[in-house]
Amino acid sequence: MHLRLVAPDMDLLQPPAPPAAKPVPPPADVLAQLMKLRDEMTQSASNGRFCDAASREWRRLPVMWRVSLLMIAGIGADVEHLYTLADRNWQELPPPEREELRGVVRDAKKHLGGLTALAARV
Image 1 (cartoon, one colour):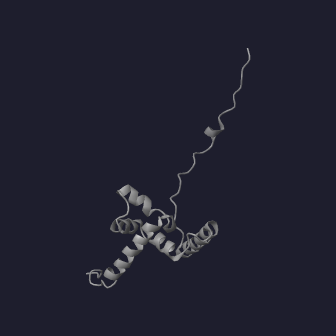
Image 2 (cartoon, rainbow, N blue to C red):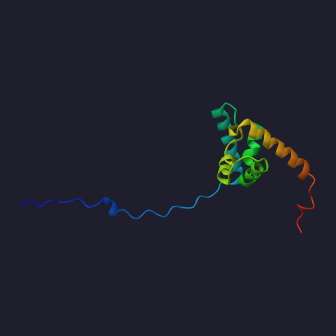
Image 3 (tube, one colour):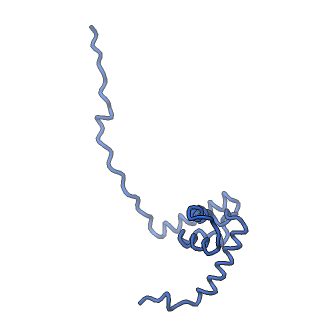
């Protein structure tokens, strides 16, 4: 009769892993540097296609503002489609949609640019 020795499971001997820490956003100066590096890499990787002023402005708009602009422009058949379009880079939008959005933004600047009382804190 042979006795067979079995090595203990090494995972059981290890202490449990600590819980994952919540990510901490970087300080503002580090974030600005990271955004600059992101823009440089985007320009390098896309040969400048996604780094024009309009692309940067579109990317900086909160997604709800992008969705609202798409709705005002009459672009997108349903809400899901609007969110998909709103998540795209500016240059990824078809040219007719970009031109329609430009018109909506020009109209918004004309009508909303002079508003002060509606924006005032009470």
